[in-house]
Image 1 (tube, one colour):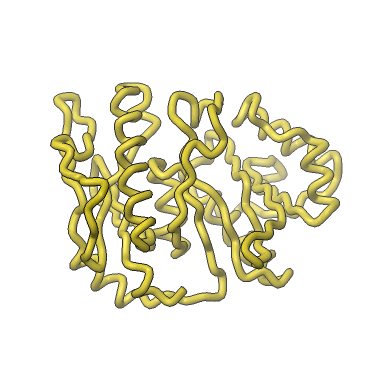
Image 2 (spheres, helix red, strand yellow; image 1 turned 90 degrees about the vertical axis):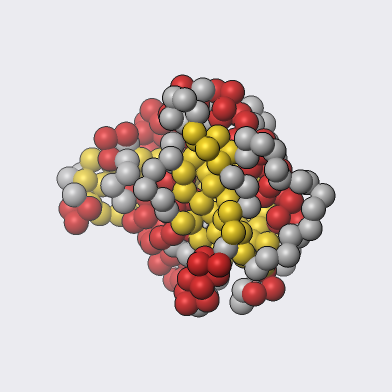
Length: 274
């Protein structure tokens, strides 16, 4: 399927209207107004559309950001039609972003992800070799769309330095040596539970070069089957990641497991070429 798609830079009001229709189907009341998208693309922003046989099946909305003296491309939203999700469309859009960034002199692309959404973390850390060491608590406030309703809107800040290479050999070694920071187990219904004995201590100092932190493979399934368990994951992962980030660790990789959970690889930032 992917060899038949094309990615096109959206510019006209007619194209924006197509994007807005898909945007509303995916995000409902949280959809970005079409007039804002049009204003953005005419003033330095970027909207990319993915087409399959002239049908729009996905889009990406970016704008220019500036923080701490650094100009970057901020990727605010990716939306893919339901029938085409989990087929690599998001990765295609990210690489199209990368080419745009290179052509326009950007060194950095940033975006936000829910730290419990394993498929988003997989794209960011496993496929694109990004890094994260900033955690935002309830960043957007309460969100009412299908993906976010029911949990605080915590977000990881993802940084993709598009011209910077990271040594994979050293990360492979660190992954082998990494210790699981807290244990996890399964409920009688086969859902993963994190740190059931509450062994994580907020004030403790961490000294190892690398740790592994599990996250559920299927957050949305868990939210339906056990909302309280999903909420438990949210608050425990929030506590652990903010603690590790404050002690100068960073997420650099996603370690995939056969079922139930995947794991973040957190490494001391002093060991990374940043």
